[in-house]
Length: 226
Ligand SMILES: Cc1cc2nc3c(=O)[nH]c(=O)nc-3n(C[C@H](O)[C@H](O)[C@H](O)COP(=O)(O)O)c2cc1C
Image (tube, rainbow, N blue to C red; front, side, top):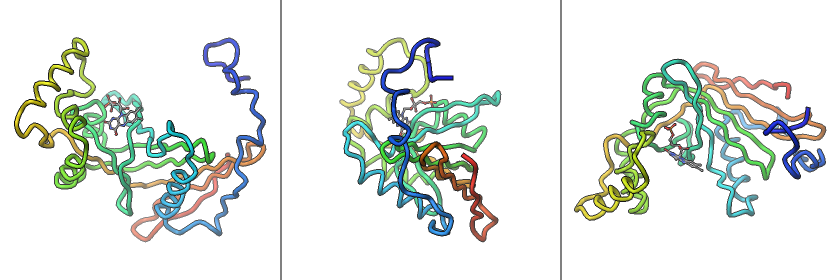
């Protein structure tokens, strides 16, 4: 079967690509990866940023998947704003659909895809709000326009039209102390339970290494079939 999103024809240029153009020459070996996946993630992030020669690709963009009250999956892109041994952090409106879903089912799957280095990273684990102090610190670092938009936008709600949002932003911008971080806005941290590193290899015999959290002690490393 050929890739054909509209049921007929092919996406120009997509199916014609040679396989060796889509594979990486760098093997991913169990013996060479660090014991802690966050170290490998950091290394891959650095390489994704350094090897990004385009203005359009944001290496911090990642897909966040949650489940709603009915158990249905929901996915959208958010920006990775930080990571450390405690987890991966993104910021959002706590009253948005994703915020409500995470309050109900505090568990998420994240996917980062870096096409230019032919790599994908998948993370899953429990999600918790970061501290108010951390959220305020990040909020205050954002440009004023972004802060105002975050304050006035009832994210995920239906609005009458764009003018309503623009008028609300304009009105708020006139107010004194207009850019205080609202209580309903802040960060979430995903604490990885699994961390999978995928790297394209020749003939689609790709590398997949998955770290699974092994109690408090550390991580168990598994190779998965591509
Ligand atoms: C490149 C990109 C980056 C985005 N970054 C964020 C983000 O960091 N936080 C956020 O709340 N929404 C972000 N969005 C918007 C979300 O994809 C989504 O539309 C919004 O959060 C509402 O999702 P929800 O209704 O499922 O809660 C981003 C969208 C794109 C395309």
